[in-house]
Length: 521
Image (cartoon, rainbow, N blue to C red; front, side):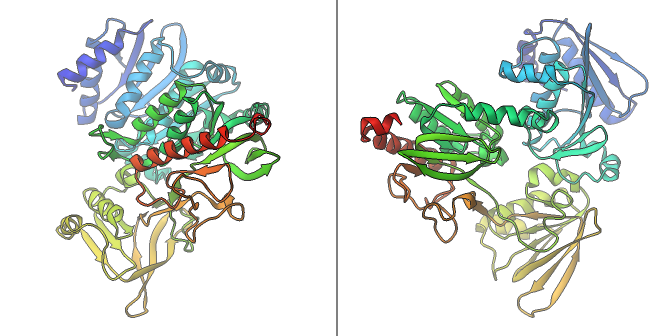
């Protein structure tokens, strides 16, 4: 099942096991069960601390449970955790085997102290780059707290179950049989939802922070670069972010980051955070900024939690988000057939009829990708022509199960109350309204800067981007901005990193020119 190279790497990892790991397999005579048993046999052969036994029954077949003698651990994989989830399997083996997790001790203590009984089920797809964060977070929680159970389920392998529970995006999490959440989550976000006092404690800790010399708002490539450059100047630096990594977390393959021929978004996001944490930077994750104010000689950033931070200078690097269509039914059917990530959610629409909205590179790439899974793909473009590169258009038009509609404006997402059943669109040539019967809609119409909270505070472009000069300075002295939230052209990771570094250097230059008393404030 595993090639020689993977076996060699895995064997070196498994040498870190500190206690026995018992794996119980539930299988039948099917092909997937045979693959799972082959995988488990490979794993067993690589460490004398691992045992594998077969058992009858099992809620899902194929599946396997991991535990350790004397430890009440409830952790199960239903299906084959390969692809993006192979790392989740490796980490689960190590953590069940007693290897210390690489998370802050305070977070571990919070997980261990949690009271109650929590049975989590996570549906993932092997092509989803967002899913491992959720799977790994809940696996860790199951290892640390005997009251927490986690089952990670390959949705593509259990299609009847997925349809019965109306899972239409991954990752989707159920808690004690009820939908708990969808999309990327780390242990902090999960704890914030089940530990009622967590948000208040986090807000209190933020309020107790001393003023920063540089406060970075946003944790994507621009924010990470800004934080590193500021910290290297020896000044007090903080980062407040909704999720460290930003849009990078939703990016599949990255092949244009100079000196790095190939990486994937989540891997790069982890590297960014690791790099920032090498310095004395205060990182405050899972926080959303709602207000920027000039206060005395500095600034105050108010957060959605009610907490506030003070700083002598601010660097805004809030990035952007998927642009939505803004039509009736879109919000109602988000994660119920309306999706944005073809790599993540595509496997859930295998053999179904879907539409892709948008004829740029991202839309055409999505249509090509999804055509390999779906029964039929309809690409809908508002303009007269597609705007994607010619090479992509040629490949698209060579696919027999793809229809391209140009001069078409989506007017409504149709559904039955539980899931998408189709969409309505206007034929801009004739003015007629037509309908398509569909099971899913993937929206690929670009990005919107995360600057709504800044309207009326500083200068924004008509598109909502922050106006900056060549130094990254905004219309407010002492406030700088970088990355996709600004008017800087060409929204690229490497450009965002450079813009973040530039803004940080400009912020430092601003600080050293302040009067001593003002800087101290």
